[in-house]
Length: 374
Ligand SMILES: *Cc1c(COP(=O)(O)O)cnc(C)c1O
Image 1 (spheres, rainbow, N blue to C red):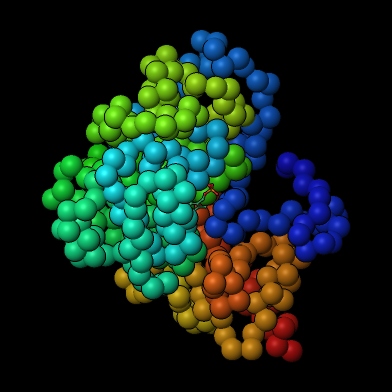
Image 2 (cartoon, protein in one colour):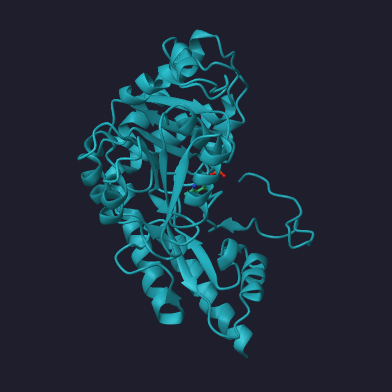
């Protein structure tokens, strides 16, 4: 077992406590095999052993994403690649579809990069629908679209297959998708859907420690990138491509993450992609039916996430106390995000969380709620 000592933000000395298992929507639980791989002695990033590692990771990620598109590795969290995606693509104007805090973040990133853009927002708990996308794009103002697949702050999973169907009617518009909390946990076939850039950090559905990210990038985006000015260097897809040709990164990457990702890809293929995707559906059903019995679900019916469930709080119930009590018992769940902080709470069933973990968690929550009521 990896060691765990430290201070949690609850302010208690925890070194004698059980390591709290992560049921928060990132970072998620990491398997010991991955942690051990990350502790390997470094290799040089211009060595041939590095290029072999690089190629293996790229091929593995392509398989998980059902794509032949190029894969870029980011030594940054997904937010960095979200910035890269808009800086490399938007010539005219970007439509940022917003349904919660993370999709809103992409709008802020676009705006602060000096790019012309509009926020197209739906109420929290609602999804970005294909009809809305068509209505907005029909105006002819936009050459780029940003959409979040799984809005982690509200537990809404946007209907990405149906949205992709609409995007097909606009072949010149670039389709950028935040897949941070769905990639490697939910099946999304990048090439079939025509997604131009798909982005994820590794600390969510990939179940690695934070600090690294991956994206797939289409040929259409590379063509756009050639015309774009002032992209900077670190996030220029053309610079990334130049090094990718040599199976390298432009600067020293987080090599420990690459060791970890290689090991994790092996674990994912051992489980089997379909088994992995089905496991997430099963876990989501378990948490949703529990949530309906004890609370109520925040996200609109028909658009509920397979990786994170957001529950409405009950009147007079102390979520803060529940979360603290669970933490003391070794289970870390999450409160609501931003404006939903005290109104909702979230349980992630993402990455490497198993059925037995959710069974245990839900029974401990039931027991804890009884304690709180007595
Ligand atoms: C976590 C998250 C992000 C931000 O990812 P970082 O790794 O913190 O940069 C963006 N979008 C979604 C949907 C997320 O869940």
